[in-house]
Structures are given as structure tokens and as C-alpha cells.
Length: 130
Length: 136
Length: 102
Image 1: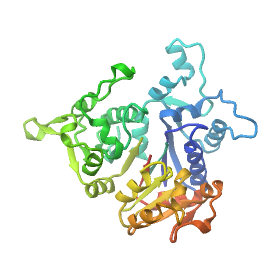
Image 2: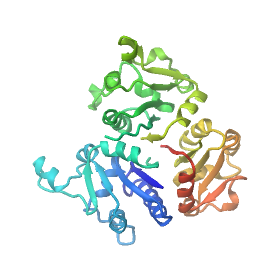
Image 3: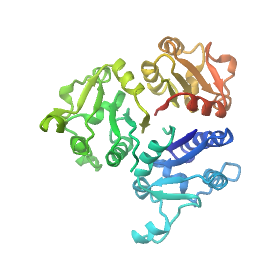
Image 4: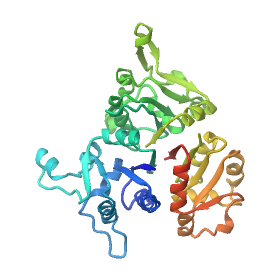
């Protein structure tokens, strides 16, 4: 079965992105596919590579990046939500005249249409949020 | 665009302004309208506060997005289910909500109300009839 | 045509669980996750309301969240099913849709 996953909250303040990660891992282990993971609202902050949690804490972004590499997952960060919150890839940083970008490996920034497309293509869409 | 037409329901249970969920949910609905899916919106619990008349955000400095609800008809989003019990619990009636209309192309573009008042049981039926439910 | 509902808030903080149960239909499953697991205990001020609202609805709880919060499985209301993340995935796959009561 093909799952689409929506992550509406992001790292550390809410448990949502952790639950989403554990769900994704279990789905893949169970032989299911994940057509896309869409990060929205504060969930976009999962995709910054500049987060430095204490050493005894989990590194949420790295967990997702590793899972994406291992299973060729499509991790999409909503562009509108990302721009509000200062999450940029190289292209966007250049286009907006900003002096830095912070998107992590394995994530890409795209439009809200990708969320709808995921809902159409996936057999089941599961949302994690506040 | 996909050939598949799925039933999408956007569930709104949160009040506007205190958090961004209502506003960013509306952004999804507007973008989603381009995908020619069967779209409905549900307003229950505090979500009914999103639709009230007379919102004026000037003094709090946030964008007043409530007029956007009246433009939904232009995006062919014409089914806004509002739960009666949620309104009543909050001391509201239909009169307290914005007048939201769409032009019915199958009926000589007659203006019709987009808001459909439903009971809690009817809302449960609407929810159970969907392919994809997005909550924000 | 059944729905898997997820509730992630304590019923002592928000109306989500009660609202969810008031909309769930016979054959549906309500899965309590994250802070939602506080709704699964017996003997609370809300246990009667929770048990009473869910006619024909299966109540389930995400065990890792229960364990994390130090809630002994023995405290659960009668009939509450306990699942791990793989069980959560199975529930999502075997129901026709998932609705998150955020």
C-alpha cells in the first residue's frame, strides 16, 4: 500500500514529527511504500540542516535524511510555509536576495500542489500535527 | 493533472488568528482547487469562528483573511459544511456568519449559498463519505 | 467503509477526543496517540463519557506513547486495544481513510 504522510508540526516543540517518523519507519519495514512526506506549517522546520540538539537527544532532521536516503523517499517542504519561516534552498536564497540557505540533504522545497497530488496518488493519507 | 477524482475534505476545527492553522488551511484549499477534485470543507468545534462576520484585524497587525471565504465560489469550492451544534454551543447562529455564495453554472448562474448547515450526525456522514481528509 | 481516527491531545486539555467520538461511526477505530493516550485510562473523570460515546467504535492506544508517559497497561479501560507503530500502520491500511483530530 502507498502511504502519503503530512507533517504539520516540527521538530522538538511537538511530538508530531517524531510520531510521523516512527510511523514511516514501521510502514517501510512492513513492506509498504511512502509516496511522499509533505512538511507544512511549522513542520517545515524539520528540514533545516542548522539544528544542533544536545548530544543525548535525537537529531530529527538527520533521522529523516537517513530514512530518505535508504528508501529513496520524497521529502517535500511547502514553499509558502517555508518562506514565512526562513527555510530556504540555494535557488530560493538567490531568488529572494538572501545571504544563506539552510535546507538539509534529502529535502526539497516545492508548492502546495504537491500535497494535493500526494493525496490523489497515495492509497492513504495520514496527518501528524498539533 | 491526474485523471483520478477523489473526494477531499478539509476539516477546520480551530479558531482564526491565535494560530496560523486556519489561514494556511485556506491556502491549501485555494491551491487544491486547480486539481479538479471533489472538494468540501467542514467547519466544526472552534472552526466555526473562522466564518464569522465583522472580523477586523487592523489593531492586532495580522492579515484579515476572512474575505477570502467569499471568493471560494470563484474557485469552485462550493460545499462548506457547518455544524449546527458547534454554532449553538458557541452562542452563534447562521446570522452571525458571512454570507458566502457561489454561482451555479447548472442553474443559469443563480447565486446560491455555499454554507450548508448540518447536524452532528450529518457531519459524521459527510466525513465518512471522503477519500482524503486533511486537517490542519 | 471505516475510518481510523487519531487523537493526539489529552481529553483534559481539549475537546478533540469527545468531538471525535461524537462523529465516529460503528466499525471505526479511534486510536489515541501522543498526549491522547491520557484518554484511555479507567477511573478518570472522563472515562464514563469516553466509554459511553463510542458505541460500536473500537478504542485503541499507541503503546509506546503509553509507556513513555508511565501509564501501566493495567490502568486502561476495558476493551482498549494496544498497538505498536506497526499496528498503527496496519490500522491505517485496513481502514478506508484516516482522520486526524488535530
